[in-house]
Image (cartoon, rainbow, N blue to C red; front, side, top):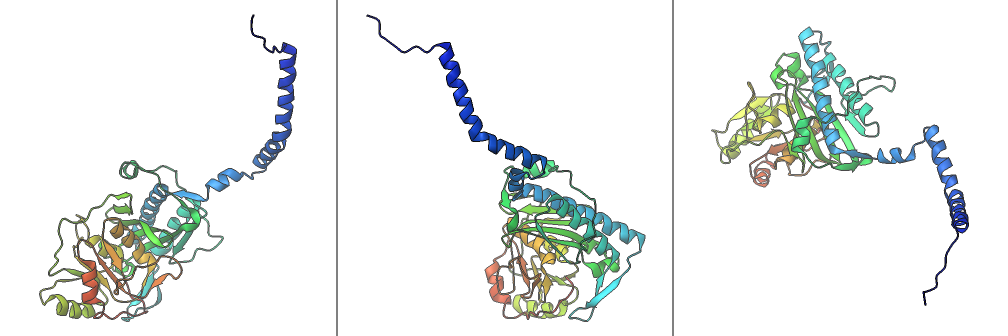
Length: 356
């Protein structure tokens, strides 16, 4: 005897499907209507939610472009010889603390490029940008092949964790003296106060160094460093203090290089084979310095296994105040803790500003 089963007529199947569609309509019609209305009104909630995250490779690409764009302004103004120098005040050593048209125009281009690309990020810079001072400069959303080749994995971070520090013209004093080999433009991205992306661009040669912590870099550390009698690089404005202390610490044969620009000094610790780029083993700064002067170099050194701390060995946090009052001790390929022990109690630091 054949098994018995239930058979639905075509009419029954049709009625069942209509009932199901009715239920789905009542459940989702309100949701769909609200989403369509939100879309037409410009309230696109889901893209807005995505905007709370930023990809670090994109930030690096924008940082490189910003440094290059600022460098174009710096170079153009210097070649025009229309610097429009202004004195902001005096340094601890009594030298003029200057601002030029190159600083101002570079600052404007760099700031607006970053803010137009990522409106939600905080950008700190030396010269304030007025609310109505707009610039149409934009990023084309293209990540250079070199960055994608070196840094293969995306690294999204929350927008509210990011602070970007830009230095539109490092070594302004040397810039006014036409010692342009010291000049750099710099961008740094800090995440939760820690420097993770650094870009140092030399506008008068076109050289750009960049690095991302736990990502990669286009620059390397040198093969060797002098551990016993390191060459020390310091600011041109206070070399006398450092010379006395370092020769007492490392011996009379210790070489001291006096140079302008914090970016230039950090590059001196690395494998940069450019004309007029000097090389040192340790970078020391003994007075107050602004964070936009040092953040990019700090990120690059961290990415390459180096260190930049205060003279007492304390990590520098890149949030809050824009100044660092503890001095700078930067090294790579050295025993940084041993350097701290040798130098921390011997080199005085102060809260007064001096050229970098």
